[in-house]
Amino acid sequence: MAVTINDIKKLRDMTGAGLSDCKKALIESDNDITKAMDALKCETDFVAKNEKFVNLAKAILDLAMAQKPANLDELNALQMEGKAVSEQITALSGITGEKMELGAYECLNAPSTVVYNHFNGMLSAAVAFNQENVAEDVAKAIAMQVASMNPIKATREQIPQEVIDEELRMAVDKTRAEQVSKAVENALKKAGFNPYYCATEEHRDEAIRKGYMTEEKVAEALKLMEETAKQKEANMPEQMIQNIAQGRLNKFYQENVLMEQVYEAGENKETVAQFLAAADKDLKAIDLKRVNLNVD
Image (cartoon, rainbow, N blue to C red; front, side):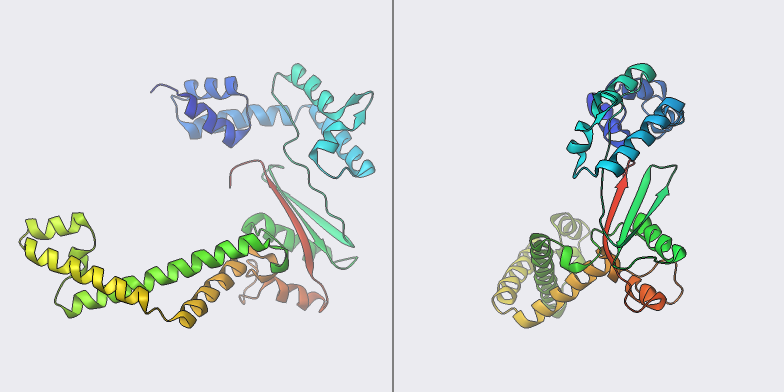
């Protein structure tokens, strides 16, 4: 199977490897992207264990801790032994033959923080707490929760309003569509039609072909569906729609907000907030960062 530029770009997006390395891996794996990823991972792991690579990574981390740059651009621009960090990385790339760059940089400021590294350093999670001296096992458990469950924010108040508005809009649209669909289905059943054979053009053709419906009956069903949908849309119970949509928005919070997620290592379906409160009634996670060099 021929290797296409789209295959190469896809593999690069998934691994961060250079284009030529991705092409070579795909050719050698007969365009099997899983095998190609494994081959690239072996090469990357070899570089990541290289002493010069490890030393540079540690030096950059020490520099970041000392200088506390605000973002990745500032970190890349910091001076290290007469060169910018980005230049030091480029120089090492020339030695190892592996294209390298800083993939991510995140910083948290809080009374206490914890970091959890997983997948040989490919996935990292950091959590900030509102108190100092949080018990190590409690803090690590929450960082592992972030690594595993991938919440987008620590609290719902941190979610941008535009995200909330969009989630609510989609919830309202979905609820309206469901109400219309339910009304149409009930009308069809009441009129003696099988909703399955009326749902799509393919199903209607199947009904005609098998003799379950005539073309006249299909036309009658379509007219009934259209009239019912219009009538339902014009008489939608708005308060009920909003209530259902709000319930869906709450589910979004429960799935994506750390403090509202179910604590996955617990046995009683307690939330993260309840787990923390059991350790200290005032303890809260107030921020988080998660970096995954693989693809979620």
